[in-house]
Length: 439
Image (tube, helix red, strand yellow):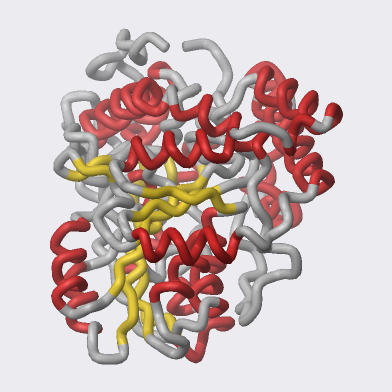
């Protein structure tokens, strides 16, 4: 336990990931091969759907699915607790965003709110499975089907999750997965739409046939950024400098540095896609994604062990709101979010104790000035956006650091390992000698 901190995130990639991609980019092999078809077939099998079609990004998949399934000017019900560009994809697709409030425990849509908002103007519901925690999608899908309302599942963070044995993304008209740099299968950029609807697949495939392929230069920049991130978050390097720099920035409120590790800066509304956004995935990216699919179950078991330990170690702290603990495969815990009213104080305490954690910087989009014309009061989303802290649970993390995080949190709340209120405590926790499953 004398080791320094592990970073709050690392990518799901290996040195060979970068070596293979650089080789393909410089030899021209990046654009050759039948790997797109192989990738689509593999994801369709994983999702249990009849069709899958690769996209340049998950958000473009959302845009294409929504645009195909609604008429211009129809309303699209969605969670306000999401990245602002998801809202932009609905707007660019011709939809009118209608924000439905969320359940605080899961951070996902409240079904009762959705049901109350559906009317004759509703064209679709965009259901997000956030933090790798699947919402109960089947009742929503049935209610929408009964009203002839389309369902698009944003499963960008929930690849591999299953609800009652059925893959998330497969219950509605379309599901969207992400294969971006920070997802649990990494192709640097990339997404995919899965569906059982042959008509939807045919329309998407027909439009995409005219798209140019991904440009090499932006992909090379993304690969370079990923490699730089890997170096900065490699534990020996991270402990030597980056942790101390960013800890000092957060403790002393140095905004110029804090922005460097915070996503969702400068939200703005878009009514049109950026030029060049509609491009086809490269075979080299598809090859990476196919390789990553084989590790989904293994990595999930590691994250599940971390989530279980967080739950057991923190469940008795009344001031913390924890996510549900589920072992049925519906929650794959790509992140472990907890909520606390004074999250800044808790994050600063943990940073001082050598634990690298961060607030979740996702916004309540219903309150953003750029979306003022779509404003709707969503108190649960507002509070969740203000209080959520992300505890690391990525597959390269380890159990010793999970336990370190738990000890620091319990110390903050004055709890000993038995749950009694006490002074600062550094004793052993349940499972202190445990390790993650063999990888």
